Image (cartoon, rainbow over all chains, first blue to last red; front, top):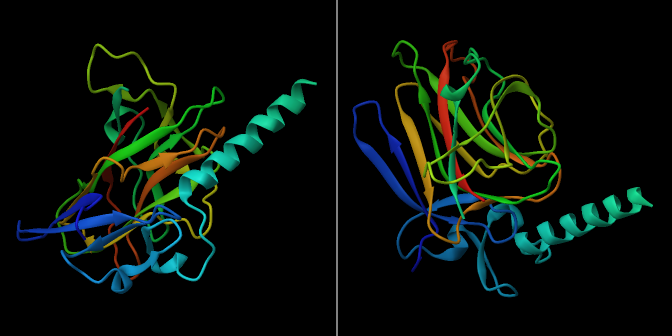
Length: 86
Length: 157
């Protein structure tokens, strides 16, 4: 990973810290811990359509970037509200 | 863009842990729809220290559930109140969207965790009424922690 999208820190019972960089799946936003220079395919996968890392759950599924899915859901909600006003 | 904090200490009574997930903090989109971006999550146990297994999960929810409604506090006092609805210390769980766990961590009761997003890695609460994100915890079988947990979620909108 060249640029991590997050940082995860677990404080252990002895007071020591376990730290890991994380990335956020482009398709479902799952947070996945990773190590520096780790093979993207060992973390889940790399979507060549949206050019982003994805989690193992989204491997093999269609490319629907999460923000696109949110915009579609928001549009559907907006249309439903407009219809309710009629 | 203002930043806010929603935490279990802002209202209600912390609920005892069980083998089923309990929502510590929930953020929900209001009817005046607006997005929120979660960038910081923290959770840990505040009961008597002991060695018990704990599990945390962050997932998407489509109802509010039953809990204490709070107004998330702005980190900068000069900012106004957010319209995002905060609900803490839930007594009845909201509807959780299947297969949407965003972060899952198993740990010891004595341990705590924190996740911080880099810019661009935030979790998005969609601008759809009653949709939201919840930080939940449980004490899985055969663990027996029945004390309480505290958690905090920071976001901007």
